[in-house]
Image 1 (tube, helix red, strand yellow):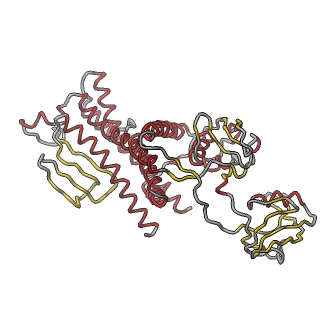
Image 2 (cartoon, helix red, strand yellow; image 1 turned 180 degrees about the horizontal axis):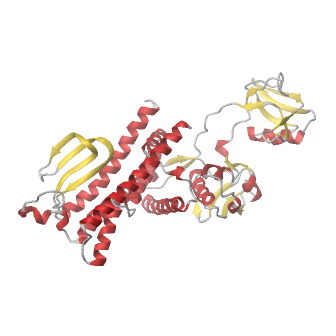
Image 3 (cartoon, rainbow, N blue to C red; image 1 turned 45 degrees about the horizontal axis):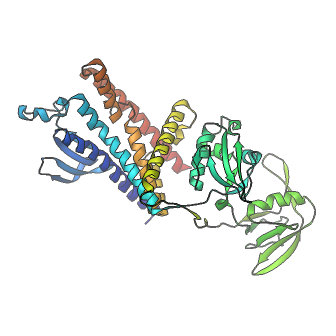
Length: 449
C-alpha cells in the first residue's frame, strides 16, 4: 500500500473508531436519561449507509469521515408532539443535560485508558534510553556516551521515547531539570541540565537539538559512503570501508571520526579500516577546510554511508493486571502534558506550528500503523485523549461550550437567552474556523517542507 493510500486508510480507521466511541457516549447516556435519539451518525454529509433501529433511531455512516453527531429530540430544532415532549433534550433537568454532553469526552478518556492497557499488554517496541553522543548543554552537565537515562525530573524513562518527551517539555519551558543516569560503569548518578540557558528564540525542534543529546540508536556506523574528489582521503579510502581507528584511537561510530581528526590536526596519521574482510592501516594527512562561519577545521573528506535503523532493544510491557494501573498513570501523565502544551501555545512558549490538522494526523496514523499494533494503539490513545481535551475547551459549538452554558444556568438559576447562546455559537464557529485554518496551513507547510 502506498504512503498516500495508507495514510488515508489509517486516518479513516482512526477517526472512525474515536468518533464512534465519542458519539456513543452521548447516545448511551441520553438513552439512559430518557431522551429520544433521532440519529447516530459517524461522519458528516450524505449518508452512505442508513438503517433505522427498533427504537426509532437512525444509524448512519456518512461521506465525510471527519467527525460525527448524535441528533436528539429538541423543541428548539423543530416541532415536537406533546406526547413526546418529555423525551426532548431541552426539557431535561440541567444535571442530565450536563451528563449527556460530558459523556462524549468521558467516553474518549475511557477509551484512552483501554487502548493504553492494550498497548502495555502487547508490548511497545522501543529503544533503550542510552546516550550515544553528548555535546553542548548535555556535555556540560556531565552526560557521556553509554549513560542510561533512568528519569528526567520525576518522570521515569524506561525507553528513549519517554526520555525524549520529558526532555522536549523541559526544553520548551526553558526549565532546568535533573536527570538520573546509570553510567557505562554501572554507577548511578544525577546530572543537572541547565535548559534555562536555551535562547528563547529557538523553536521546539531546535531547542531540543540544542540540548546536545544523540541517542545510541541514531549513531551511524563508521562506514565510508562517499569520498570527496581532491580531498585528503581521495585515492586512499574507498566507499564501503569501515573505519576502526585513527592514530591508534578506536572509532565505534561515524560521529567519532571528526574529533579524532581534529586531534590529529595537519600531521600524517594512520587510519585503520576494514575492507573486504581485510584490515588495513593507511597513512592520511587531514586537509584544512573552512566551515559555514569561516572557521578552519581539519577533515578527511568523507561522508557516512546510509544505514537502516537498528532493531529495537527495549520493550515497554506489563502483564494484564499490572497494565491497568500503568495505563491509568500514563493517561494522567499524557493529560498533564497535553494541558501543559495548550498552556504553552496560549502563552507563546510553544509555536503555533504545533497545531496539526487531518493531513498530519493521517501521516502519523500511517507511520504508527507501520511500526506495529502497539504503536498504533499508542497513537489512537493519544488522539482519543486529545479529542476529549479539545472537546472540553469552553468554546461554544464544542461540548465544553455547552457545559459552560449549563454551568452559567446553574449559577443564575435560569437558562441563557437564545440570543446570548446564538451569539456564543457565532463566536465559537469563528474560533473553530480559525483553528481549523491554522491546522490546515501547518499541514500544507509541512508537506512543502
